[in-house]
Image (cartoon, rainbow, N blue to C red):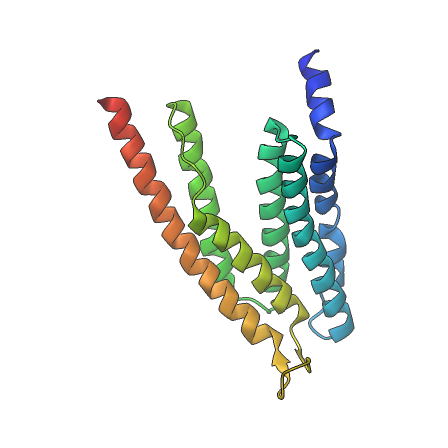
Length: 198
């Protein structure tokens, strides 16, 4: 089997097709974001939540069906980052998120990608930490809540549930975890360099 045919087969397996499908949900989310329209914002939040849940589904199917591929390992985290950063950048544009928060998170991701690339070139394996995974979960939940934005009355809550305030709380927690995981990656990278030098 040629390299092209192998890549094509990987792209067309079900988990990877679901991952690619998540990318096509980004434009509707961006289009629906409207700081003055609760209905459009709610739809944007629901679509974003669906895309986030599909991330869980494609990972589960890949492991269950033995379809973990090199292409999937590349495109799955890429889809996560494109989803999160696209939504967050546009939320800054419509003044629903502070720009500094997005700049720090984006800078952290670029920093980690740089470390991983340098590590890979030197044969150093840096496993994804739990902090990074939790950061992604908190970030996606936070974005969903900020997208919903308006207070809504929910079952079992006496007062209206303030989605924007809850979303910002999750995003600040995600920020803290992102900085902590960046430190963890840095230490692992340093230790890997020392081990290779010995």
